[in-house]
Length: 491
Image 1 (tube, rainbow, N blue to C red):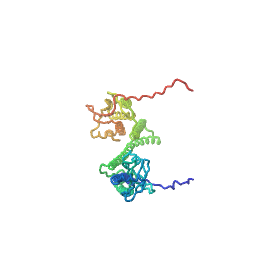
Image 2 (image 1 turned 90 degrees about the vertical axis):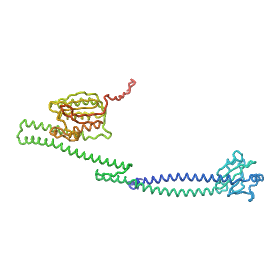
Image 3 (image 1 turned 30 degrees about the vertical axis):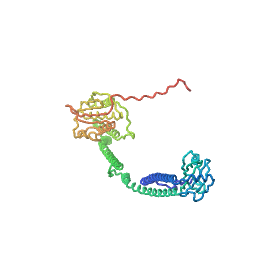
Image 4 (image 1 turned 90 degrees about the horizontal axis):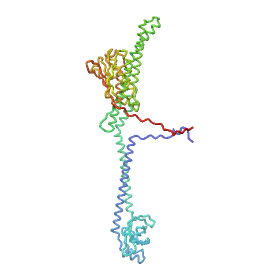
C-alpha cells in the first residue's frame, strides 16, 4: 500500500557539480589507463617468467636415457636416491604410448595428449602446464622429450610455486601503484577543475547578477583565445545588444509618445471647441465648423497612419525568419504607383512611369509594396504643386525621383532613422517612420536603399532601392494531381 506523501519522504540526491564530475572523469580515465598498463605489464612479466622456466627445463633438466631404459625394463619406478636426479625439486615421470605414466622422482602430474604424441614419436617435444595428481593442487611446468631407442617419453616438470608467488607480489605492487595514481589523479582533477572553471564561475556570477538586477552594464574580462574567453566575449556582445535594444525600445516609446501628443492635443482642442459651442448654444459659423471638422478628420487620419506605422515598425519577425516567397517587383511597382497616383492627383502631382523591366525577388509581398508606396508618398510630399515624380525599374534597381527642395548633405545620414524629420518637413504631415520602414524591409530582403541628391538642373531628391533577384520568373512547383479512379462507382 502506497502511503500519501511517500514521495516526499524519498531522499533527494543532488546532481554532482561540474568540477566534481570532471574530477571523477579524470580519476576514472586514469584508473582505466593504469588498469590497462598494469594488466599488460603482468602478462608480459608472466610470459617472461614462463619463458625463462621453459629455457631452464631445456638446458638443465636432462635425464640420462640409459637410466630411463633401465627403469622401464626392470619395471621399477622408485629408483635409488643416489641415482635419481631431482634438480630444483623437479618431477620426472615416464609416459608410454598408451598414456600411462610411471613416476621416477617427485609427484605424479597429469599426462596431456601432447605427451602421448611425443611418446609415439609424432612430436619432438611438448611444453605445457599440468596439475599435480597428489591432491596438493600445485601447477607444474612440464617438458616432455623423446627417449631414443624406446617407445616412451620422459617428462620433467618443475613447480610454478615461485613463479606464482612472484606474480602475486607483482600484482600487489601494481595495484598499490595504480591506486596511488588514481588518488593522485583525482586530487589533480579537483585542482585542475577549480582552476579551469574559475572563469566559468565568474561568468555564472555575472549571469546571475544580470538575472537578479537586470543590469546590462556588466562586462566580463576576457583574456586569451580559448573557449572561455570566446564565450565571455560573446556574452559581452549579447549584453551590449540587449542594452542597445532596451535603449532603442525606450527611445521608440518616448518618440512615439511625443509624436502622438501633437495630433491628440489638436484633436482635444478642436473637439472641446465643438462641445463648448453646443453647450453654450453659441453656434460656430458654418465655415469655422467645417474647418474644425476637417481638422479633426485630418488629425484622426494622421493618428491612424502613425499607429499603423508603429505597428509595422515594431512587428517582430517569426522565430524561423520572415515567411518569404518569389515576388514580381515590377508588378508591385505598378500597383504602388496606382495607389499613390490617386492620392497625389488632388495636389496636381503627376507620377510618370519610365522603363519598368521584369524583376523577381524573394521577400514579403505586402511589406515590399508598403516600402514602394512609402517611397512614392515621400517623393509626393516634397514635390511642389503641379510637380512630377519619376519612377523606373531597371536591373533590380528602383528609382523614385522628385523635384522638390532636396535634402542637404548634413541631413542625408539621418533620413532613415525613426521619427527623424528635417526642419523643413516638420510642418508637413507624416510621422517620420515611412523611410525607416523602407530601410527595414529592404534589409530583410537582402538589398539596400539610399537617398541622394538628384542629378540635373531640376534638382530634387532621388531614392534608389536595389534588391537581389533575377529577370526570369522562378520555376513553379508542380501541382499535385489527384489520383484518377477506375471509373467504378461505389455506393
